[in-house]
Amino acid sequence: MTDEEMDADELRATLEDAGLSPYQAEAYVTVLDLGAASATTVAEASGVPDPRIYDVVRSLAEEGYVETYEQGSLHVRAHSPADVLSDLRSRATRLVDAADEIERRWERTPPASNEASIVTRFETVLDRARGFLREAEFQAQLSLSPEQFADLRPTLERAHERGVNVRLSIHTGPDGADDPGDLLDAETLADVCTEARHRPLPAPFIVLVDRTRACFGPHTASVNQYGVLVDDRTHAYVFHWYFLTCLWEVWDPIYATPTIGSLPAEYVDIRQCIREIEPLLAEGRQIVARVEGYATETGDRRDLMGQITEVSYPGDRGVGAEPIPLAELAGQAMFTLETDERTHRVGGWGAILEPIEATRVTIESADNRPIHLIYNGCCKSSSYK
Image (tube, rainbow, N blue to C red; front, side):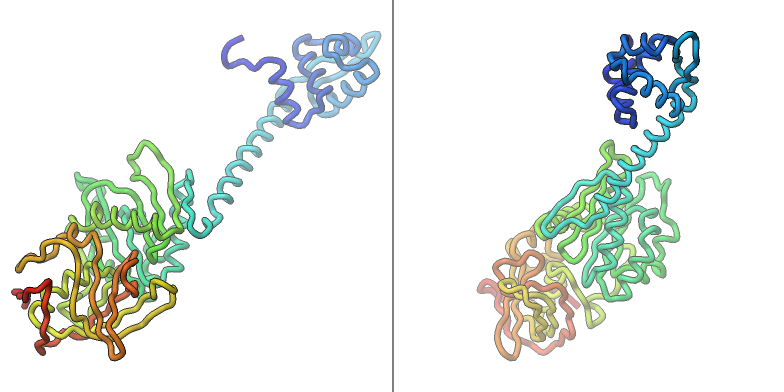
């Protein structure tokens, strides 16, 4: 017997899985081995009781497995296996289809809150990304190929129309063979995103939505193909920093809506906001901002209007050190907002120490009226114009 051959016990067990009774499977395998024999001989060789063998043989004949004939007594021989093989292969196909459908239905089920799931089909990752984007309220970050961009473009357009801040990192091959062409023109990007950058290297597929949900799939050249679905702030925060450092910060912008140069300017990333307003504060500008977000202790929504008077982050903030390196903003980054009622400390994604986590900051004005600002005991100056 070769490694590919199936032994008799395994064959009988498989036939039972396909719908034969144990006696039918025993008798049929015996007939295959004998070729043709009397019913009593089949009973003796198979272990099927004599009183049952005639019913078993006739039932096999009705189902097309064997044929019977009279030769002094009832004899049986294996029928041409074409019909049997067709039936078995049809059953196998249905089982494979059922397995695939079970997998699809399982992967389609949304992960429970605070859960990360591994899936095997990229189509599942793409479908879940569409669902997350349809429910997006304020922020989406994506790393995707031109083909994936084309697939998600209608969903992105609708999200952008709802006011979702969309950032796209579009990756292509280094040789330009899959150059995105018209997909990167400003008119197209203006309809789908707030800012876009081009990475001329393969990259994973990533969709981050509202700081909580994430979809990940390795780039198409990866040996291992799988997907990760996340509904959890902590896991999503890890993907966010991977997006910032590897897929965003070092690549050239190809499209951006106006920010601080044309007010009002909107930010969903407090670190980007700090980068652009610190020179204005150092210059003595009076910056009025609206902050939308949450109270970190209760989770209640907050909507505040006031004046940003100070920014704070670790690192050496020497005069003229702009833009601020991202590494210096990796720790605590916050600003102080003075409202009519009180002073608020405002942090960004993952804020723990600050009472307010900002999801959106809108700079309404940045006037030249001087205000007294002191940073770590020393006055700041800037060449911002």
